[in-house]
Length: 252
Image (tube, rainbow, N blue to C red):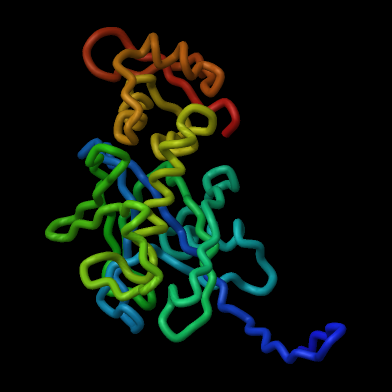
């Protein structure tokens, strides 16, 4: 492509970057009472044998939101409505993928169920990693002997050569995802969708507490967040005592 200026003509080479959808897929394990994120182990280079967030290429005739939901449908077998996915950010560091110019349109998807995982093409393993708050806005994710932590701002380097972290810049993407969820708890707590269509105040408070917003009792929690919740008129037995009211997200 040639660009004409008043003084001279410059020839500029335009590259067409490869576009991927990186999906941070959240779920809740009712048995262990833990928030989970899905990681897959890569079967191919680059970063063969590294854990990574699930990705898919965006197809010609679909939008990014559609691609994020398609990934969940194809890899996990769940067909979700559009409300269960939201765009996180776009990651464009020139060397985030070795040898290629690749952009990541990242999405977060909130699963109302936690299905059994089966590794798909290009992966050797797929597992739910449990979130653990580490204080001061940091989080770790654990499965068996494997553990990964979110990053501080000064720990993110454009030189993507991890030795103990996730593949590519996925540690950083996961860090941004955790921050986004924590920052949206008071106006758009879509993370509560991992509890299913309805939940009790106690269950919602637990999610808030895991992301660093400590809610000591139901009455204060409801007073502070009642604009976000709708009483469904139903109840469930959530511990000893009388049944607990069930709520849903008002705008979900």
